[in-house]
Length: 483
Image 1 (spheres, one colour):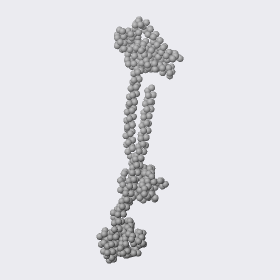
Image 2 (cartoon, one colour):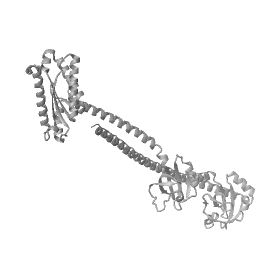
Image 3 (spheres, rainbow, N blue to C red):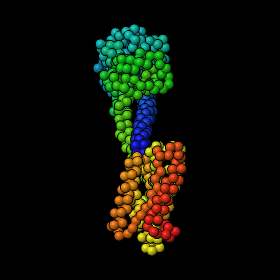
Image 4 (cartoon, rainbow, N blue to C red):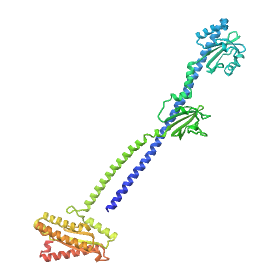
C-alpha cells in the first residue's frame, strides 16, 4: 500500500513538473510572439516617421525654393533696371561688382540678344552661351520671347560645377539679358538635410535597430543607421526582396548582416524603407520574465500541493476516525465489515486466518470495580492482542469486549502469537494484581478448504465461545453474571 501511495505521489509530482514545463514553453512562445508583434508595430511607426520627415523636408525645400526664385527674380529685374538707367555699367566690371555686393548677389552676367555672355562680374565667363552646356541651355526659351523671365533651380553651373541659382530677364529695350547668380546657402543646407543619409542620421537610434533606406528600383542602400551599409545592395546585407510586393507592409524575419532580425519593409516615393530589429535585443527580457513566471508557477504548485496534501490528510484522518474506535485505536465494525467484503470480492489467500477475542468477566468487573476499571481492562486486552497479533494483519474492535483479527500468517506464527498473548495477559495480571482473561477462537482457511470468509468467521466465533465456556467451567464463575 505504501509503495502504491509512493508511486501515486511520484506520478502526481511528474504530472505537476510536466504541466509547469508545458506552461513555461507555452508562455515563452506567447511572449516571443508578443515581442515580435510589438517590434513590427514599432518598426512601422519608425518608417512612417522617416517618410513623414522626408516629405516635410521636401515641402519645406519646395516652399523655400519658390520663395528664393521670387526674390532672385526681383533682384535680376532690379539690376537690369539699374543698368538700363546707366548703360555704361554694362562695360564696367568693377562697378558691376559693387552693384552685386550692394544687391547681395554673387555674380552678374550680361548676355547679348544671341545668348552669349558679353559682360559681367566674372570675366572668365565671357564667351559662354546658351549652347555651352545643359545648365545654360535651360535659358534658351529667352531667345524666343523677350517678355519671358526665368529662374533656375539649384544646379551645378557650367563653368565650375558650383551649386548656384540663376535668374534672368531682358532689359527694357530688349537688347540684352541680365542674369544674376546666387549661391543659396540656406537652400543648400535644406537640400543637404533632406538627403537620405542625413535624414537617417537625424532619426533617434535604438539598441539593436537598423534603419535602412534604399533606391526602390536598384536596391542600392542610400542611407542606413550602420553607415557601412551605404552603397551596398539590400540583398548583400541579407534583405533579398526581389519579387516582393512592397506597396503594403511586409513583416518577415531575416539574417541582416548575420544577425537574426524582425524586419518590416515598404516602398514610399521611389525608396524602399526597411527597419530590422535584433531578435536577441527584442527578446532580452524574456528569460527574466520566464524566470518570474516559473517561480510563480512553482510557488503556486507548492501552495496547491500543500493544500491538497492537507486536504488529503484531513480526509484520511476523517476516514480513519470514521473507521477507528476511540478507546483502543483499533479499526471499528464498519471497517471490519468492509474488510470481509473485500476478501469475499478479491478471494482469500490460503494463509488467511480469522481470530476472535472476547474479554472474560467484563460485566463483573464493571459491577464490582466500576466502568473506569472496565475500560482499563479493555485497553489492556487490546494492547496485548495488538502486540501479539498486530504484526500479521489488522485487529478490529467489533463490540464492547469483542475483538476480531484478520490475519495472513502461518500456523507457527499463529501459535507463537497466541503464546505471546497469554504471556502478555499473565504479565499484566501480575503487575496489576488483577485477573485479566481473554477467550480466543481461531479459524484458518488452510484447515477449511473451500470455506467462505463468513464461514471462517462463524467458526472462529464458535471456537471462541467454546474457549469462554471452558474458562467459566474451570474458574467456577457464573457466566450469566460474569460474561
